[in-house]
Image (cartoon, rainbow, N blue to C red; front, side):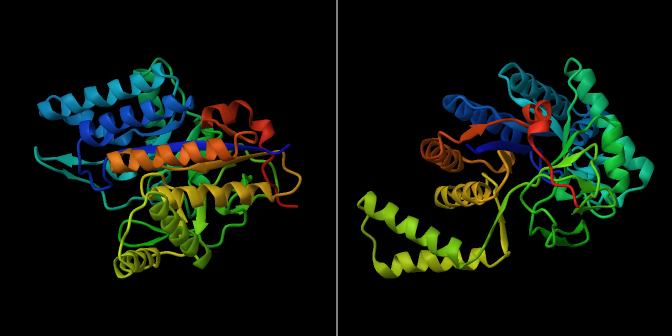
Length: 357
């Protein structure tokens, strides 16, 4: 029997431009999310953005508010560890020379780690790893995701630096992701293995290597934003309305569907991000990625990474996540397990990464 491993990951961070506070965007939402997962008896992975915390540390003696946020940040991670959740590495390099004036942060405009000098890339990773190890009883991440999905291109120095620091898994690839602005330029529209784990070509992680590599790429799942997805979303909404005996005028309901279509035209792909999809889209999305994995021949175990951003969670979004997890646990119970990236690393031989040739 084939086994599907769902890896729930969370990019635990403030806004990319330094906006927000730890209590509202990280501490409270992380606690609520962990409580939700605990009710289902599952654990998830938190990708901890460390360079934000290192920047806060530089100003802690000058600004009391930052000292309080530093404490909350550390306490939240202590709670994650005590409850058995997984801690991995996430880096937004724009925090490296951040300046705080008592009211707001000014960050570097380069958001991709690969846009920095070779020695800076290594230092960002090494300093972040050292900080986590020193503050949390020797904890040592084995998985990484680049901030803003930045990991390309070129990729070689990044991957060599990650490997030297003990990283075994990368989840920075998101099929269909395109960014082209002053902060970051990436193009993940042509990925040689868009959904299955593979050994990446260190020169260009979008490509599959012709040899075994020290780091395995496990792409974060995305789904095509096509007419099938749109029509299924409209249908499931209609069924939901009928089930709950909610009577609405046709023109009112159709106007909602029209707005959904407008939103969906922004990209050809949608990230499987628990914090941005509603309950209907999450249910459809999980169906798509699980059934897609089941169609793959000669593969006993398939890990599927989905993402989340605690900074964007609300009560409604937590409810959507709860409904989606209840749905897939019920429908795929005999073939599905929830697992963390740390657990994947301990059983890495089961993953069978694709190698070219």
